[in-house]
Length: 254
Image 1 (cartoon, helix red, strand yellow):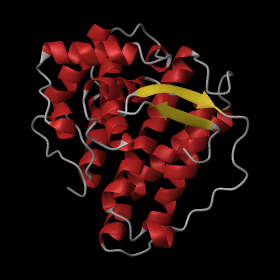
Image 2 (cartoon, one colour; image 1 turned 45 degrees about the vertical axis):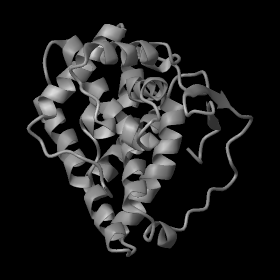
Image 3 (spheres, one colour; image 1 turned 60 degrees about the horizontal axis):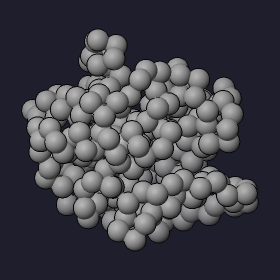
C-alpha cells in the first residue's frame, strides 16, 4: 500500500507478524503505467484482488463502527473512495487485464492502476480492514510455503468474508455474489482454497487451523458486525467452495 503509512511485517518464512504504522504518509507516489503495461499480467490482477477487498471491508467496518488505521472512524469521503474503487474495478478490470496481456497502455489500465494504488491505499487506511485481510494473514501461518501473491490471497478472503456475512444474516445475497464471482472469472482471481495451493476445503482440521490463525492474527477479523470464530471461518470457507464448484476458476498468468 504505497500511499499509506502502514508497513506489514513478516518473519523469515513469510508468516504475517504485525502491521506497523509509520509516522507519515509518503509525499509523492509516482507510477508509470507504460511500465505496468509490460509487466506480468498476474501482478496487475493480484493488485486488483487486493483493491477489490477495500469496499467490502470498509462496509463491514462501517456496519460495526470499528476503527480505521488512524484509530478513528471513517469519513464519508473515505467511504466514497472505497465505493469508487469497487465501481472502477468492476467496470474496467477485465479491459485493463487485456491491455497488459497485449503489452499496451489503455484508458482502462490507467483507471485500474489508480484504483489499485490510490483509491485502495487511501480507502483501506481510512476505513479499516476485516476478514479478507485477516484470513490472508492467518493463511500465511498455515499454508507453507505461502503459495500466492498477497492480492490473490486477499481476494479469496473477500469471498470468505461475504460468505460469513451471508451465514450470519441467514440469507445468501445472490445478486452480490453473482457480481463478485463474475468479476473474479473475468480477470482470473482465485475463488477456491484449491486455487491457492491445492488444499481441500473439506479438510475440517485444516480449515479449523486456518480459522484459529485468522482469529488470532490481530484485530481485523473482529471488526465485523457479528462475532467471528474459527468455526465460522471454517464454515464460510466450506460454503465458498460449495458455491463456486461449478464456476470456472483459476489464477491469471498461470
